[in-house]
Image (tube, one colour):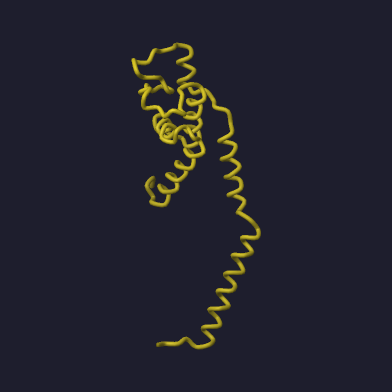
Amino acid sequence: EQRLPAEATSAAKAEEEQRLAAEMAAAARGPPVGIEQEVQEKDAFLNQPPQPTQAQNSTSQNPQKASEGYVFFGSFEVMATSLPNKVKPGRHSEGQVAMLQKRYQVPEHLALRLVLGCNADMEEATMRYDGIVDWRKHHDVDQ
């Protein structure tokens, strides 16, 4: 069994105490400013009213009839039976797709899949996509 000299042990203890004191001081100050701003932006995003998409504007001017058993969701025909109970096609749901497209700069089909996959729960959809973005950054996927 090898022992450290008393000086090394006391130096390690002092260093650990300093680290703990710094962590406690940081915790007392609260979250970093950037996190508070991010939370405020996310709340504002989730609470904003849905905006009509370009596809909505064009379909309202020139209505199209979906194939039998399908409904239009944005510019896509979606099988009516594949929609979760909570999701009803229309201005609100299509507005949710448009909000995700705008926030994450993704194509309509990806935003649509995200909305449908999360049963139109926008908080869940943004949490999931934020997780995807973080994972992609961590693993340098977009480099």
